[in-house]
Amino acid sequence: MRIDIPRVAYTGTIKEITLGRNKNKITIGGESCYPFHLFEGTMPNPPKIAMEVYDSAPEDWPDSAMEPFADVVDDPVAWARKCIDVYGAEMIALQMASTDPNGKNIPADKAAAIAKKVSDEIEVPLIIWGCENVDKDTEVLRSICEICEGRDLIIGPVVEGNYRAIGATAIAYNHTVIASTPIDINLAKQLNILLGNLNVPDDKIIIDPSIGPIGYGLEYTYSVMERIRVAALTQEDERLQYPIILNLAKEVWKIKEVNVSETEAPLYGHKKSRGVLFEALTAQCMLMAGANILIMRHPEAIGLVKESIKDLMNS
Image 1 (cartoon, rainbow, N blue to C red):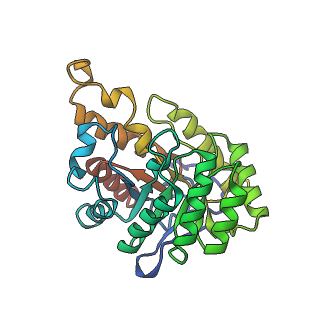
Image 2: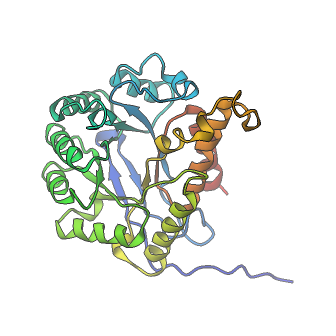
């Protein structure tokens, strides 16, 4: 007996966006079907992984996450180069954690100098991620946009409270913006509309719907991303037809289940393996929800996810 597999009729397409400069440009988006539904449509550009680098040595990482980078954590340029040269990173995400007013609170000019130095020394696309304090990010990201003119950075998070200032600066210096909203499809669409009204080009916008790791809100992120893709692909909602980026590593590696010792929680298993698997499984779920760029940390977790992407694209 013949079985006819039902197929979804897609009427929309995710916008293609090219990131980076020169020969190391990469393209994301362009899919005309739900994630990896290659029997129904196409995914011309596989999802990408950006390895994160911090602007100064992190103080709260578990040893298992610090180990691969212990020799370079005091130098963001050396750290970025190790990610590229040793681990094959196709993108770098520079986390500007030291700008946080509740932490080291380094000034905008110093942060911009760090970003420029990293940008000058690497060839792959560079993501700049602020400290998520609206006022400080406005100051820092605008300075970075200006000093890194012509380097085609991906700048974020851009939120409702600073989209005018950062969006206008990104337009002036030709950078891509990351439109960030707190796990809500309506807020995501509204911010994209506001950026469009500001005349940020469609090929310069990426959606960040926010991320909760496994056990800490992943299902909310998944459902919002799923709704975004349904609206984009089957309802032709142009304000949601953008690629999606997720800054997942810093969320995964701070949870209790990753950091508690084997002595305190012997049933949790080997601490390093636990962290790697939490990161890889969170990333895998987000791929199935429609992520185009994943910001990740541990090389072993990245290796697992890269193999999964390869298998899914060839299935």
